[in-house]
Image 1 (cartoon, rainbow over the protein chains, first blue to last red):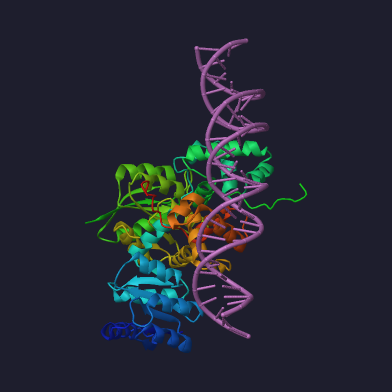
Image 2 (image 1 turned 60 degrees about the vertical axis):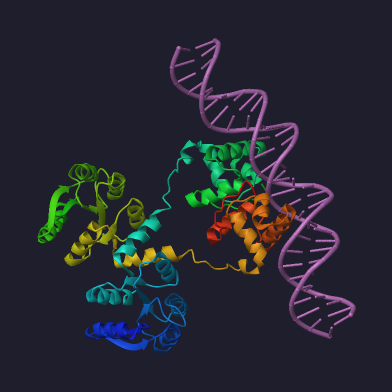
Length: 221
Length: 221
DNA sequence: TTGGCTGTACATCGAAGGTTGCAGCCTGCG
DNA sequence: CGCAGGCTGCAACCTTCGATGTACAGCCAA
């Protein structure tokens, strides 16, 4: 079961080096080489390789855009390769559907492992990228950013309802209270959290993941 | 420069196997072993190892909670190890501050590489976990969920301002128009996106990542 | 018991938000 | 040209929101 690879890299010397590394593996087959993004896309669609090794910086069409087109077509797994460990590149590439993101300072062994990994359908990231991705992921820590802890249970319920986009009237019906009471709670919530409108409260609730489960109102009730 | 390691794993046989693998590396030093979460935390705080190898399922205090305490104290890098590749474990561990997450079906070599990686301060994830994490990260793809495309340029600006939590008055000043005009735009936006209040618009803008850059108002202007 | 404190509840009123109608302004087209 | 259609702009009017004052029940300590 050989792994068919397309190498997209504009610098001929680097491209040659990559191809050489890959050709050394008996079960790898470099089926094509592209010197720019446009070429990478058309070759990927034509050859349907298992993996596209994609440089970020390339003429005509950059690697991120090329990645987007290739993954949108489901043509191949894309392993992005770059010299610079910039968040912008990483985020762009991953959002574009890349299966992996490696830096060019890697060992040949790591590259080979990466190819195998993405060919399997798994993900492969450079360690430094992994750490930052974890941090990004971990950020939405469901907790009480100082203020939330000061809310009473009832206030928290109202807060969640605001986060769901409900009006005071809807909240009142949902939580079985008068609209006037809802307003009191909203007012207290805004004061405690130092916000100036329910819109800001809703945004905060979104950030915190505090949202009332969507239960459509019963028109008859 | 030896790497000091604490192994936290309740099953004695597994723990012994892990320790054996680690001791085979000349620059690794297993400085302690814990059979439950409580012990892991106290040993980590006492010994200050470079890396804690942490099992998820453990008596008294589970691995995720133990990880949270250890990382909160900044006592060590934690590399979480588990048999089951469950999202719940992964998310929990990463939110708890783990630097890595590996599955027990790994090769000894991978474990060793993982230890070195997290000891450096980088991140290490099992390939299948990496792929899912990338997907999670990529989800907030900036696109136009049907409705956004129907907004005019000006309306999009107002929409972004709503997403930032601004009032009509603030939006009017920021975008240089009369408040009455802002209201018109808001009204059109709500109609086009089939929303019933600016709160819902703000929530949608959050989801879409459409938010006006935060530029505090100039009081003098 | 009395008093203080907190959480919940309601009514009133000024402020902000949202709807509607309309007027310039472009661009494209008969 | 004359006109239609879309974008942007404004004002008048009604609705919803939010601040404020007040009330009352539960709880704990003096």
